[in-house]
Image 1: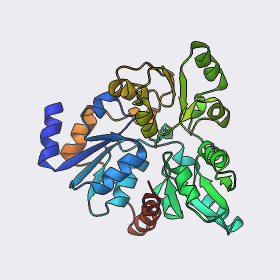
Image 2: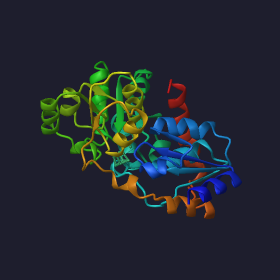
Image 3: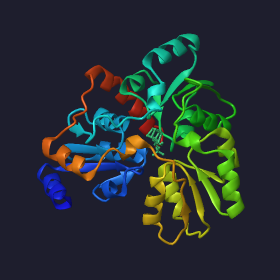
Image 4: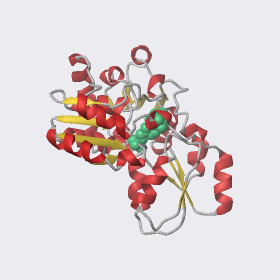
Length: 298
Ligand code: 13P
Ligand code: SF4
C-alpha cells in the first residue's frame, strides 16, 4: 500500500500534510508533519496540484482557503473537531454587537464561516503574539476558553472575553490536578497544551503548542517529560527524540484524529476525494483573517 501511495502521489503531483496527532502509520506516509500553524504555512508554500490533509476538517479548510485554485482533499469526510463546533457565526455577530470596540480573534480550530467573520485568526503557537499585535484593549476570543485564559494570563493589560465561555476540547480538559500530582510524585517536566484547564496550566512547567513541544523536546536535556496533550504526540516525540523518556495519558485520545487509515489515504489519492468546497466569499473573508495572522509573525 505504501508503494501505491507513493506512485499515486508523484503521478498526481500531490503533497500529504499530516498533523502531529495522526496515527504514526499516517505520519510515516506524509511529506510534512506538524502543528496546525506549520501545516497552514506549508499549505501556502506548496507547489503541489493536489493537497491531501490528514487531520481534521478545519485543517483541510484552512489549506483550501490559502489555496483557492488548488484541489484540497481530506481522506475521511467526517473527521471534525468538537471544539470547533462550540462557536457559531451567530455568536460572533451578537458578541460584536455587544462589544463594538473589541477585535475578534478566532482560533483556527473553527469553521471557515467563523474565520470569515474574524478580524484575525490564531493558532495555539501564536495566540499571544497575535493578540499582542492588536491595538484593541478588548478582545473577543473563541472558541477555546482555556486558550483564552492562557492569553489573558500572558497579556494582563488586555481584556480577553471568551466566546463562548464554555468552549473547550474534551481531550485536553481530561487532564486534572490529580494528573499533575501523580506526575510530580514521579519527577520530570510537565508540559501542557494551552487547551488544558487554567489550573493545570498554572502547575505545568511549560505550556506549548504541539509544534512547540517538538522544538522544546529537542533541547538536549534528559529529564523525562509528562506530555499533557493528545496521546499520539508522545509517539511523535519518541520518534524524534529517542534518547528522552516521554509519558502519555493513555485515554487522552482525539477520536476524530484517528479516523484516517492508510487505506483511506490510498483511496483518497486515487479518487481525489473528499474535496473541500467552500463558498468563494467565505474563502475570501477567511483568507484575509488568516493572512493577517501569518503577517503578524507566525
Ligand atoms: P496545535 O496547533 O498545537 O497543533 O493544536 C491543534 C489542536 O487541535 C490541539 O488540540
Ligand atoms: Fe479538536 Fe481537541 Fe481533537 Fe484538537 S484534540 S482536533 S482541539 S477535539
